[in-house]
Amino acid sequence: TQLLEQSPQFLSIQEGENLTVYCNSSSVFSSLQWYRQEPGEGPVLLVTVVTGGEVKKLKRLTFQFGDARKDSSLHITAAQPGDTGLYLCAAPHTGTASKLTFGTGTRLQVTL
Amino acid sequence: NAGVTQTPKFQVLKTGQSMTLQCAQDMNHNSMYWYRQDPGMGLRLIYYSASEGTTDKGEVPNGYNVSRLNKREFSLRLESAAPSQTSVYFCALEGPGNTIYFGEGSWLTVV
Image (cartoon, rainbow over all chains, first blue to last red; front, side):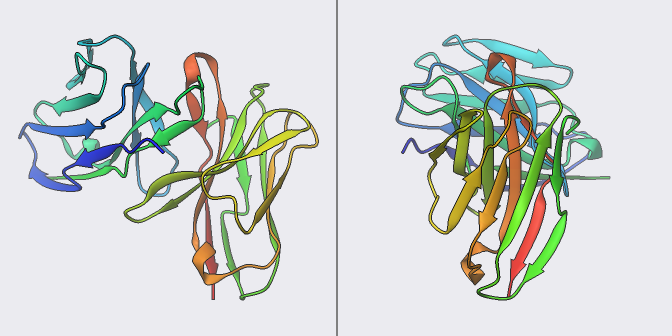
């Protein structure tokens, strides 16, 4: 089993602050995905990164895949209450193109 | 969550009772999955189906059975529910680029 460790587990910040969450593993991945899950709903894909060192931006969210493809980070600039949710990283099981392993998640709360 | 429909949304069972969670898709994709989500444990794969008529075990299959009788539907059955199966269950399907589309979840409590 490939373990994806996310940190921090919980994060409570005020609107306007910046934050970074991390997804780390000892395994090398062909790709890595980030999902956001809002209360009472299923996770929704935010981004897929596939190249070591790749940086993708989605409005105020910046995703980076580590050079060695073992880790990833998500940086949010000027957080808003709408960013509140559970952020999950996920990566394919070894030897398969599908069947994702999910991290345990970072629960973010952004308050006014 | 459009395209993946799960029923029921909420269910309370007594220990030993059986039930089936239903999942249907309208996106015409082959691969479908059942995950459970527990606090501090993340999403764990129970069973998956690569195509109609085929199923395989995931990370935590014990106590569950699945059925993929057609391309559209993938059901998860608990034959004899246990309190350890209290969880939120998500059906999902795989789209292009390995994107996983999740249903809205089914909250199951076993007392």
